[in-house]
Image 1 (cartoon, rainbow, N blue to C red):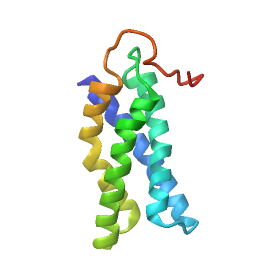
Image 2: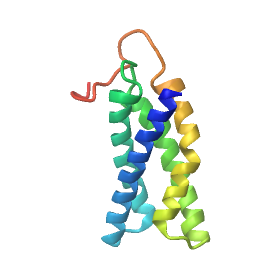
Image 3: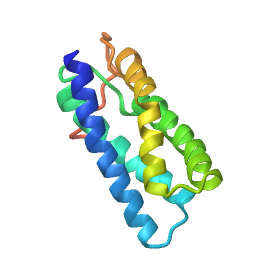
Image 4: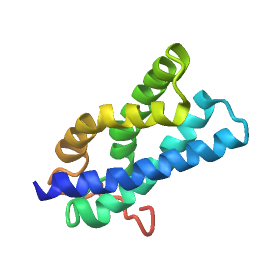
Length: 133
């Protein structure tokens, strides 16, 4: 339960990062379907850093695994849901993005806890947040 709460706390902060970057890029008149992946990447890097240091401190996790699971899921689901909410239904991009983030949070937690930060022995599974190795 503690891990789930920490995951959600980091996720809320990451959602704030994602929405802020999206809003900033939209202010510069970037198309919402181009701005969304850039905003997601900012949130993925933010969340990975905090998950390594706090949510799953002491567990080994790889940045490439986090990108492959949480990042890819966020990218695909956010782009599809943004196209539906903002494109088809005409909702503003920022609330559309918030809905997309919320809808994928359970799958992101499952992937992070079962694959990215699962206990594993042996070399090659950990990427240091400080050195990138």
